[in-house]
Length: 204
Ligand code: MLT
Image 1 (tube, rainbow, N blue to C red):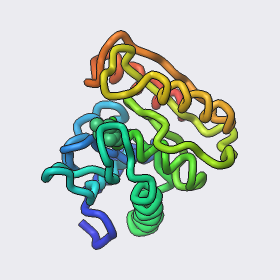
Image 2: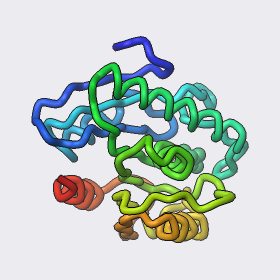
Image 3: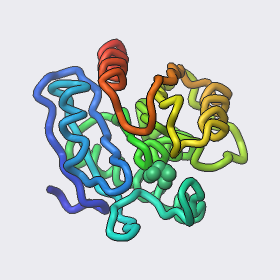
Image 4: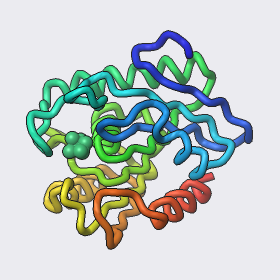
């Protein structure tokens, strides 16, 4: 593991031509958590998997929250910048292109924050159970950037209004958005894996 600003794992590509994936875990996860998911979604792709540095009762996260669904916006801004810098450095050190983020829950929320504030950091994103992490002052230009948003229609952790607002903001920013609400809750299902795997395969 190279010395970069965030603890992480990096798995080099074994297949040419696949977009690298930036794996962003949920609350309480770590850099190991989503490696099997990344390997399933895009076999042979390079995987870059950082661990969030914020601890909430010992559980790693990518930014602080004041309560469930209530985010510390100053911390979110700083952590998003830190993650963007990490991704840039890692791309140089490991000689990979800008990655597609695959984020779950808290990881999906910081991936959305990265997309909305650091428009060049990511080649696209798979947002699994995301909400709008903050209300942008201006609409960023994300023209044609591929984004897949999969939510659970019975998800108790993601307020429907915030999820819908994220859809509106991503559309207004010009992303090439695929949005699906699955008949499930916060946890991932086989449908998530199938849809995300197909979506990634057709990006190439
Ligand atoms: C968050 O804090 O980002 C969301 O509430 C999702 C979670 O981590 O539970």
